[in-house]
Length: 284
Image (tube, rainbow, N blue to C red; front, side):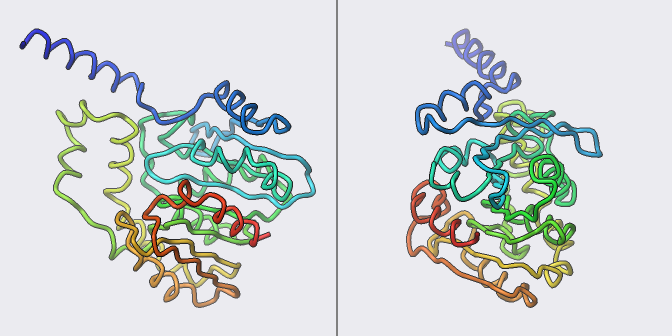
């Protein structure tokens, strides 16, 4: 029994350290899945360096350069394929140029498993993709979960490039950040070695998130673009109180809209895609 256990443990450790449980889709996989869902759409792939040196990977769709641009930022853990159904939707592609990136530490961005806790650096990664994909446009940015403070930080730092923001179950209120005992335990060896890299990276960027959100608090008054808040009241991972925080902080927002799902938990992005798409289209 010990021999079998040792073999299974070795296989698990090898899979974890090689990043086999990476929760992402390859470029070839993107092409295949897009072809299955919408044969008329062809994905575009971008690899852009940020000033810190990391190469950011993204997937886009563009049917016309004249369309408004929608930038999609995933949560934690995750990757660009969180938005596969959106990029593969012909009605969405007819309304927006769209691009979804693999945030630093995830997907096919350089340095998988190397977390980037700084919201400022995360926003710079988004800017690198925006500059490459839509250099002459103001863009609408949608962030799910931890992606929400990333797009908020982008709007704070680059207001001239921001046309609007959408928070999908956004984790933006530092007072709502909990710190269960296992966070620090998983962050260190030996549990670190047993945790899939995507999950460990997620944990490593969530641990300092409260302080990052506190640093962002003075910047909320600088956001002067339309903002939409999409949240489920029964969200058990990111409390609905984050919506109340947004209302308190966005004092200079000219157009603040709410869409509350009574049910849907944290996963309305996938459980309510048709409704979410309609809401995204309202931000054009």
